[in-house]
Length: 157
Image (cartoon, rainbow, N blue to C red):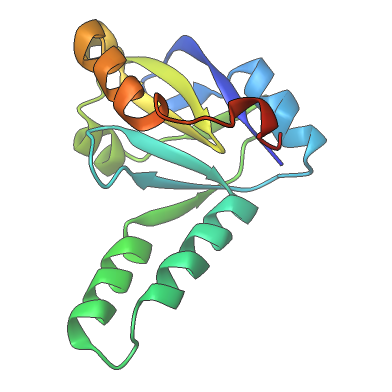
């Protein structure tokens, strides 16, 4: 199972091409993931790269929760998949970020790749200059979510 971790700066070229960071490329290669799916994040102004197998699991998870005979559910699914595009890195490890995606995420040139679990987020660098949450809010949220667990030592890895 792929777990990306890291926070790496990069630049897009004039055509919108960008190198996937070497550490992420190695993880993708070792997992035999040759194709990626690019989509704008649902909640944030960033792009998300899904390894193809992760994309299909995510798509299937959504599909199972939606009724294909419900018009609103069909629109939700249609919107989710229509905003996605397959990316195949070139032999140098670059992908071409289409202009419409760059615009959706407010990316000019400088980007930051952030490994988030089994996906890679691509942010306009200036949007990541400040923490996503202030430190006090972050610690309080973690305490609320995790602080009452009695069996942390017994968790499966």
